[in-house]
Image (cartoon, rainbow, N blue to C red; front, side, top):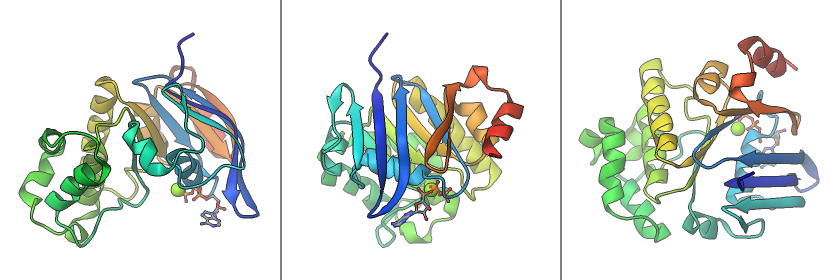
Length: 234
Ligand SMILES: Nc1ncnc2c1ncn2[C@@H]1O[C@H](COP(=O)(O)OP(=O)(O)OP(=O)(O)O)[C@@H](O)[C@H]1O
Ligand SMILES: [Mg+2]
């Protein structure tokens, strides 16, 4: 068996005394799209924040590319190839689109300037908007910028938290294509979704969370849409 690109072992995490995640185990293969599904408040963002190093787990380990990173600070994880586009298409609102992309390159000291051009080729809608402040973008444009910015650090592992939330269908389609292409080029994608149809179209593996626990994990091919609906309705 090959070593998983990301391995999460018996992970528990929360906020102070509020326990949110319980005994999470997850193994993700290089270049695949692993989808985390679950209703509001089950702990999806908490899991991504813990993987990104923004929350310290109370128990368990995280291994990225064979390196134990459980206690690494977020910037070390970025330098080791992890990138994160958080929920709510978070960008630096006062900065222009171009500045948002440059900051990702200079602040992280990872990646190459030509990746800015590559990210713009992936999201051509951003090209005429380079001088616009990120705070003045539409939701769909801002989401594309958030993913483009994450790609500037040349990640081997990309964490995406609900990239299609509240976005109009034609831009959802563009984002789906980008995610598929990114994985096909060898980057592992951990995708949190609430829209079942998006998840089922993109995922290689599906993990369903409920109340902070994994209630299902397996290959997408082994999951029918009816089973997925049933799991989400727990
Ligand atoms: N900073 C925080 N302090 C305390 N509790 C928090 C904090 N952030 C989230 N929580 C709680 O942790 C639980 C899991 O929240 P989380 O944001 O991980 O859920 P989620 O699955 O991402 O939900 P959504 O689909 O709405 O984004 C919720 O009960 C939430 O209220
Ligand atoms: Mg969330």
